[in-house]
Length: 408
Ligand code: SF4
Image 1 (spheres, helix red, strand yellow):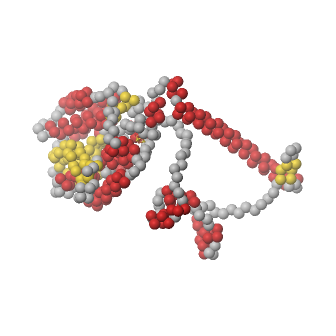
Image 2: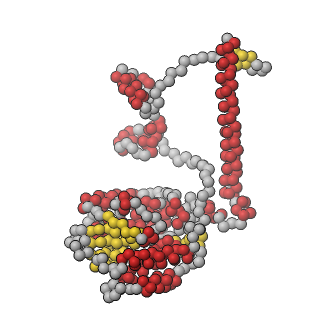
Image 3: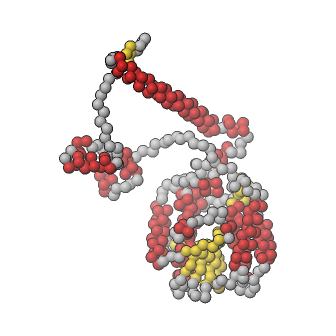
């Protein structure tokens, strides 16, 4: 039985190949990003604060000491610092500042009664044990007016828009879990603490939205389970990916990035790219020259036409060549998708002449086949007329790969 989590679903959406490495092949990596490390330490500190709250209110100093202690205890040599302009100490200080801000904002922490911390919830999306989601809720509070609050701490450096949170899947799924645990929880508020911004954001979900979410999540799980080819999907998140050595999009960079310059330049792949780039540059130079020549020819053409008109000649003689000036009729028609074009088509249709001048739009059909835009029966009827082949292309781009490194 597979238990899906919010991060498992999000990983598939970010990059199916990373999903495969992590969840199907179960390839474990020691690397941990500094952002994730900081997040864990902050969560531990909050857990201590709220666990102690049943008995007493921890002082800020005590919490900061606890944070420092957890930082030291858990620190390991595989912390990944992606943002080269930052240091580990910057992140540690950021964590301290987040705790101080949080403490000052919520002291004496009596906004609600804490019902659970790091609470595991299990959500059976269809009630058949087939689509299961599990998650851990940072904190669940109950207010005096019986509102249940689902709290989530985010140490992220990006503050999302409210519209993003109103569509967030994670806490909405947790709401389903909370309402399964406590069916009397009719009023539920989803709360995010963006602690790096000292900002609290919230959202609510209607029963209809939760039903839609269940359906969408089931569709996503089915998509994952029906996926046969887990393709890499490059994005800014690649800098934090723990599998650059296995990913076809990053592997070569990973292999050569630490080579001494001489070996780097002698690497067969590097040489191929450099040669390719040189030829492309040369080609671009020629193309620019051709454009320039075309401009000159255009000017000359105008001069020739003027000369011929002035002299009343249709042929002009040169040393080895001659220029012949001729005239033909050109019909200009409205461009594709313009209102005029649509109107013209309508007139032709009414005249029953459209078929005579219309041809099959091969590009539109190719798109329809590739994206399976028609129903299966229609596609099957034309399937004898096309074949799908894998065509390899090579395109030149800038090498913008990030230099990730470890720092202790
Ligand atoms: S490096 Fe990027 S594209 Fe490759 S597996 Fe990781 S996230 Fe996917």
